[in-house]
Image (cartoon, rainbow, N blue to C red; front, side, top):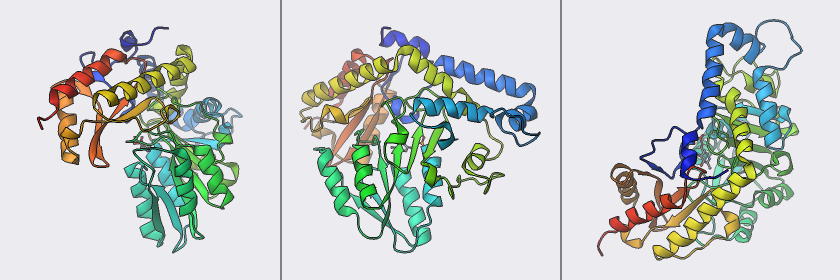
Amino acid sequence: MTFGREMLEHWTIDPDTTYLNHGTVGVAPRCVMAAQQAIRDEMERQPARFMLRQVSHLVGGPTGEPTLVRRAAEEVASFLGAEGDDLVFVDNATSGANAVLRSVPFQAGDEILLTDHNYGATARVATFIARERGAVVRTVAVPYPCFDPGRLIDEVERAIGPRTRLAVIDHITSESALVFPLAELARCCRERGVAILADGAHAPGTLPLELSKLGVDWYVGNLHKWAYAPRSCGILWARADRQTGLHPPVVSWGLDQGYLAEFDWVGTRDPSPWLASPVGLAFLRELDFEAVRRYNHDLAWRACEELTERWGGAVERDEESVGCMVTVPLPLAFGSTPEAAFHLRDRLLEDDHIEIQVHARNERLWVRVSAQVYNEWSDIERLSDAVARRIPPS
Ligand SMILES: Cc1ncc(COP(=O)(O)O)c(C=O)c1O
């Protein structure tokens, strides 16, 4: 299989756009969208039957057959190295994080540990819950921009105190695109009696996963980013002893009926993203998951090395900390404010037709390059040229 621009035929992305932002909201391949449409067509032939007797078993006697949701969950779980009954679908990683954070019975004075690279929305959920329960959010500073995984583990270990109840740790961070040493962080928390919620929004489809062996208590992820599922397809994995008392953010018929009953039906909603997700995984396998990972990683790492050098920075991370995205420091002349980041992002999109994430952090601007099989080196060159043209005069 030859990866690069010709792979765009499998996606509906506008060919006039240089799409270097796969990580933000994901992009479903054509075959997955076709499968999703076929599911919707089937659903609309007999909607009540489909929703109440096939997607769920809310109506009708026991059939002995698993529901369509359970069947899809089994397939997803086997891809993620988990048991089907430990995995439920959620609409997105945010919903999964809400479920866990709202379900943990925090007492006044308990601490929730975050890092300063947690995704902003997840950090806000923690802040909201802490405010409601009189708990405290404690934030660990990630060693950055010079990233050192060993120092991160030390910092987390140092921050754990007698009241630390839960740590919310990213598997792959959002803006900085760092792959964290999750298994080691989980061990550090476990040894100190601290539960760990892993935020793997970017991990399925980026990293080979064995969720049941990571040592975490809960894992939330998205399939709609790197695992080629349609949008609104996230997962929540919970260790067997962490399933009781875990409730979805939207409580429905399944209350107190067990983990799967609680999450598998959360009101009438479109089940097609969940049901079509195995087709995304099948496409990933067809392309050869290992080859996809290698191609995306190599492109991201080359972008890291070459762009950093061109823009006068220093590479301050190991290749191991890079998955399919990489965050590169822009020339200092671009300034350091969020407004400058918005401005550059807008100009790159509107004038240069380059879709990419730009942000301000640590007193400068950064771009986050996503590498997907439809990208190739010429996309990175186009970005490099556009940035060079836009460097403000000093
Ligand atoms: C680390 C991380 N967590 C959570 C999310 C939220 O994902 P969603 O909007 O699909 O819930 C993102 C989104 O980019 C993310 O990067």
